[in-house]
Picture (cartoon, rainbow, N blue to C red):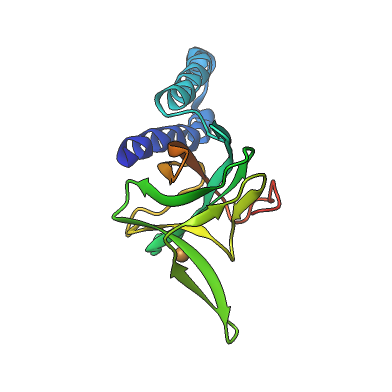
Length: 190
Ligand SMILES: [Cu+2]
């Protein structure tokens, strides 16, 4: 799945890259290219949106509302990347996030603890999702750890499908959007 998406994003990226190189050669006789090119680009972009699941900024699953799952882009040498999201439990029954599945060699739930001034990540079996509250997985705290990225880093704009597993709500499919680390934050959790 990842390679298919990568191919598509490479295709769009290449279109964008090649476009400026085409311009100097334009003459009256190649005017048709200036009309055809945007049509191709639009088709590729439309294909990108119709062949991958819609961006899952907010998903409702029973009493749970899951907001904007995302990961940060990673350097090519990165072996792991953290996934973040918010889970609001609108019901009156507590739930627990007990697992995450995705197409990586290993996916875990981590917490971050500071000891003697050093932040360490530790595996946890579950994250409590209390009734009537919002549970936040964010940098410096709980997060999903996608492990085994070697050679295939998260790239801005890429989308990472995953399945959250809740004790009560069951399996919930989500999409983690890959965000740039340098782009202005669009919310407080970034
Ligand atoms: Cu971690």
